[in-house]
Length: 351
Image (cartoon, rainbow, N blue to C red; front, side, top):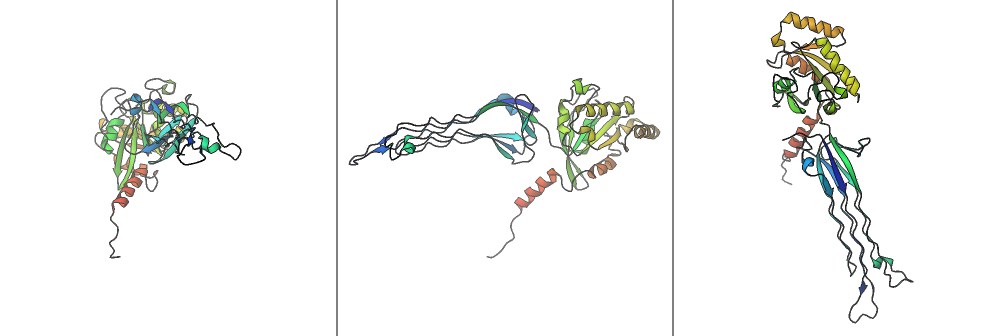
């Protein structure tokens, strides 16, 4: 499945149905009268966050969404049928932005969250509703209110508990494959990871979601490399893991480059707790790792973990530290508990 995290779509709610102009004509009835019914309400545009979606790829092929018009009013005081709502499923973490991307109109953070985004037009009044003691045969009616329409942007921000970041080739894909059920592509070249990857980590009876985003380079905030487009996917993470390649550029410089890009991006990323980890320790000796760790601490890191995504060395201690930043129950664990509760059979009773 292709990953898409932005899409522009057109929305239009249904117009209300027109009211009817009709007069009663019945055999053996001395006096007739107006009996035109009202029109039906137009369909609403409704967004709903559903489980099982993690991309906006469906909106690449369908950009126009129009709800149905309400039914026409008819004679014999028959009202027009209301049009059904048009429900648009979106992944959890989707935001709806105005056309100029300046305003967040809706934000979906939970499964089942449902928002009536555009309301359908009200149905028009039929002539029967205009009848009064002095206006016995009205011929006026309403055509029905028009629906609302607008262009909007959909932007997906993946919901994860922990974010993984670093320079290209820091070993992030190997790391997420080691600790989770993810199957990220691994390659010995920069920008092997082109789109964010999610994996569920199980550690000491706990479960949490880990997000891996493409590598950052200096100037990413200004669009260099893949740019900072994917940083939005870790805005809602509780803690960030910063992997640094011990066999790459100077570790202190690598840390400062990423720290600078987080600060330039803003959105609170530079305030999030970060766990610094020297990766690929299988390629270096213990003394070199200790020396680089001391340099990183002197440069501002609180604690430095020495790990290897390839062999699993030191990963358990790093995951232990991650658990300290998570709530008593993550969203993944909550959903699983709800499923288990629904599947449990009720206690048997003879009554």
